[in-house]
Image (cartoon, rainbow, N blue to C red; front, top):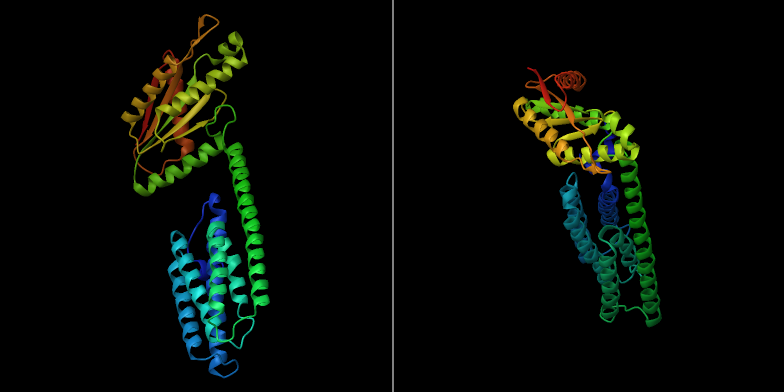
Length: 361
């Protein structure tokens, strides 16, 4: 069960491992919007009890900002695909709110700080280009608008403000650049580690553990849809003779060639794993026995046709393939793989280089 507060803030939304930085941006924006709305509401309450009088125009601006910020929060919560338009809209109302304070609260000499507070969030949420666009636009707007204020800032004060704003822009440009670089590197490392943990290093197909985990997922999906499925169990014929005659380098080439041949013969939705030295298994979702046999036969023929000459001698490698099909639900991968294994041994006993099938209703 999820903790209550994170669920209330972020809703039922999930991110892939590759979306770690996007998840950070999404949650950061929600926290900023909620905190901004609550913080502005505090000023509204303080004005209503005359603790911190701000005046009518700016009060209406703050009420508008607080209401719209909470509406944007409600729109974004649980909808990560709306992040960009919500982030742009929130930035627009922030600039309007800060401009309102600049025009209508002249007694607050530090109100320019709100424009500085805005810059880090823009770099983090909308990126470096937008960050510089907002930074330079703010510098230009403050410079041009200063002369129209009822109490303009002095020239030295404006010069200091502009220099500090440009410095902050440069600081967060470097920060956001390094942050994104860090997340990118971590994503690449995680992808590499995941590949090493789940795939056979020689052939590039899934290893046995990852393959069977994937099959369990596909069986669960088939059960929900009440669909059948099939499993192929493939064993190379006389593979030991290849290693003994041509060497282990040739044996490795054969295994890689077979894996490539099988991959090119199945759908992207199918799963394939190397489950033994020269043994491969293929899971075919939503595939009846007759179709599975056709797929197995095409794989068998493709393997036989793909072997090259080595040292002037024709490399003879074939495969015996067992097929097991499940037309209903409730069948486990362990039991179905056992059936496919038995069918493969029937193919071996019948002379090898052929396809044999066992059915399970």
